[in-house]
Each structure stands twice: as structure tokens, then as C-alpha cells.
Amino acid sequence: MIQKYHLRRAAFVLLATAALASCKSKHPTSVQPGKKSTATGIAYNQKDGFQVKKFAGQKAGPNLVFIEGGRFTMGALEEDVMNSRDNRERTVSIQSFYMDETEMANVHYLEYLNAITRDSSEEVVKAALPDTTVWANPMSFNDSYVTQYMRYPAFRYYPVVGVSWVQASDYAVWRSNAVNNEMAKGGTSTKKKGGFSLKRKSKKDAEPALAEATASPSAKPSLESGMILPDYRLPTEAEWEYAAKALIGTQYMDENQINQRIYPWDGSSVRNPKKGRKQGQMLANFKRGRGDYAGIAGHSNDGAIITAEIYAYPANDFGLYNMAGNVNEWVYDVYRPLSYQDVNDLNPIRRNGYMDDAKNYDTKNKQSLIDDKLRVYKGGSWNDVAYWLSPGTRRYLDQDSATAMIGFRCAMIGVGRNK
Image (cartoon, one colour):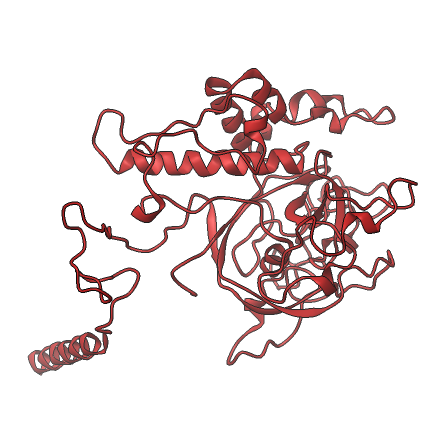
């Protein structure tokens, strides 16, 4: 009887395997392009011919989580207490992408400073240094944060702060080159291991639009090779908001979403509603009220007076940590109050110098703060009340400014798959 069972099971497995094999498409794909061109019939990878390298699909870079794209209602859900009316609800679609599961921590930024100290000019290094004086306050004894927060080992996995939008963008450029350099080392057995230079010689080279590796084409693998990843960058505002809401957690049987989300979790409370020992615990690090940064000793409400470690609170349904609270985060977009009605409904982004131009705002006579250097930041921080934890809220700051309440995380395009 047992032998018959195993034979029947083996036969079923063979039939299932054959059925799956028959279902495989015979058409070429990006991952399996075939041995020759379907347009010309010319074979690939011939000597001095067109090279089509093996490609197993895009890999997730270090610290990145895949965010499946889709449609969502972008905009503020909280009552507009600031009366800014700058993020009205509208339906947009976002292409799949990758995002850092955590904010960038002090240890990550120190790694960056160490690298550019060794191979870049003094000017570039100085331009990259965070402003540790963002902690200074003549009416508060924050002196220890000024001198120790960035470099003392106990703060290694606390989010880096005092970093401007420009510095965050520069970090993303360096990180792209560093990750791809490491991948290139692993792809060859030569003494140099396929590495390429990350040197930058001046502050001009550090600008986001111009900062690139100064490698020779032969040293750095080509984009067509599939051996390197697309660039790390700051997420767009729409990507950030989509990832923070994580509405994938509200979908069950069809494409209808059961509910919207005020925060990156279900419900209208900032406490954990699930029964058990964690019931009632704060789901984010924020300021509960005037003078109340953490509650009382022995019964601290969120466990942190200032920032907390980057994994300190539960991840949302996309697996992203601290998409509300801890620190605000820079996004790519330039700020405009009319972005909600000007941007596209597919992968929207607000760039400077296009529509709703800065010249429309009277900055010369100090009647407006709007210009092309204002960048959006989102998410709320340890120093913000719960209102700012909602993904739909938005604020702005000059791209060269920095505070103790703003950090960042990176994103990357997701290509070759939708899921």
C-alpha cells in the first residue's frame, strides 16, 4: 500500500513538472533573450559582434526592499490644521521600485566620510561633513549631542542628522559607485578585481547632477552587462508617500482596498492595538505634547527622548522601518504648493524650473519663501507631534539647510518585474 502511494505521488510530480514545462513561453524575454536576434537572425556574442550577456534579473542592492508598484490615492488625510492645502487627494500610479528598509545611520555616513577622506580632496570632505551644531541650543543642555551623537559608538545605528538635501544626494551618488565597485570585485579573479575609481577632486564634482565615478570605460562594467545596479537616489515624494502608507496591507481578495491609512499602520491610534505584551506600545518615536518627549521613567511611552535606533519600531507592511517618526526624511521633489494639480498622474515628481515657476513668487520683496532650492521633507520626527506622522503631510526647507530632525533614506528603480 505504501509503495503504491509513493508511486502515485511520483507520477503526480512528473505530470506536474511536464505541465509546467509545457506552459513555459517559447518567446524570448529580457532574462532569456535567446541565442540570436529575432529581428535580424544574427547570432549574439560572436567575436566582434553584438554582445548580449547573461542576466538573471535585477538584484536588490544592500538594505533595499522591493516595493510593488500600483495605484493609490495620494494626498493628506488628516485635517489640514496648517491650512496649507498643498497636498489634495488625487489618484496616481507608481512604478515598482526599491527603497531602503531603514533610515541611513551614523555608521553608514561615517563609512562614506572615511572613503572620501582617502580618495577625494579636502574641499569635498568638508562639503560632506554633517552639521553637528544642529543639536546646539542656548536654552538646552544638548552639548553632549553636539560632540558625541555622530561619532560615539553607542550612536552607531541612530539615524544620521545634520545632513542637507545636497549632502544626502551626494551620498547616494557615492553609494551607487561603492556598491557597484564591490559587485565588480566579486565578478572577476584578477588582482585588481575589476574595481574602479571613486575619486572626486573638487566640490563641483560633488554636486548631485555632476558627481560620477571618474573611471575609465574599461575599468567600470557597462550598464548593458547587467553586472551593476541602477543608481541609488532620493525617493520622489510620491514614491515615499506610497511606500509609507503601505496599502498592500489593506488588500485581500481583489484590487479594491478596504480602507485608507492615516498613518503607516491601520487605525487612528499611534499605539499598538494588538493583544499581548506589546499592546498599547507606541508605534513611532514622536513628541506627545509640550515638554513630553518620552513619558515617565519606568513607563516610557515611546522609549526615546531624542532619536532611536533605526530598527526600534515595527516595520510597515512593505517591511520599511520608521516611515513615521524618529526623523523626517528628505525626498527628491522641489516644493510647490500647487504640486497636486500640476504633476503627472504616472510616477509624479515636482522638478524645479518647470510650471508654477519660481518667478511667480515674490521673493525679491520678501512676500514669499518659494524658490527652486526648497525641497520637500516628510514623515515626522522625535520633535514633532503626531499630526506630522501622517504620510500625506509635507513641509519644506532650503536644500542646503540641515536640522536635528531630518535624515534620509535612498531608493532605486525596479526594472524587469512588477512583483
